[in-house]
Amino acid sequence: MSQFALPLRPGPESRAGRIVLGSANQHVVEALTSPESWPFRTAVLAGPPRSGKSLMARWFVEQGLGDAIDDADCMDETEVFHRWNRAQESGTPLLLVSRGAGWEITLPDLRSRIGAALHLVMGAPDDDMVAALISAHAEQCGLALGEGALTYLTPRVERSFSGIERLVAAIDRISLERKQPATQAIWRDALEAVQGAEQPRLF
Image 1 (spheres, rainbow, N blue to C red):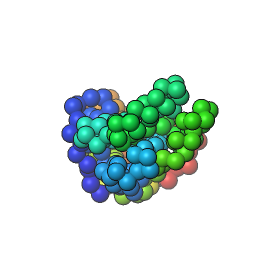
Image 2: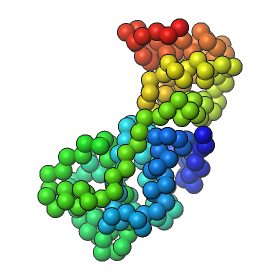
Image 3: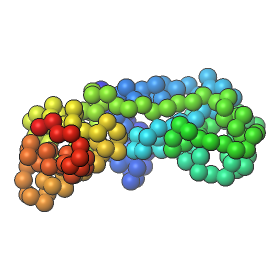
């Protein structure tokens, strides 16, 4: 598992300007580096919250690979269509970021163009990527998880980018509140805090 260094200015989304590469997004990075192969030089990137879509779009633009519209599914469809036309006229690859794979477009002209684009979807992280994400989030907030943390947490955490981020934040918060190192008791309480008592316990 590796971390992909993105040459971005620091910000709330980019944090350290890195994103973990793994089963859920390796194919996306590979596609973003070859926009000349996209149908009509257009791609649509969708995926779950906190999966790094916006960060990848910003990297795509910073690298001079093309233009990007973040949260394109929230914009006025006529404006998106005009942006698509301008990109076509200039020969600029256009990356459209959607919050989910179910972008329902009502404008017929835009719907036909987007339907012909390359569609990229972020998947769910596998165990290796989950462990790498836990480590990356812990490193970003200066949290020492303790020996055995990844073995304990990986099979128990929610299989989502946002769930992993919430878990590490909860471990960090509880550790600070108790003024104790993050050991198994804190891992367990953090899991309960983010998953709720109704979740099955594997302790």
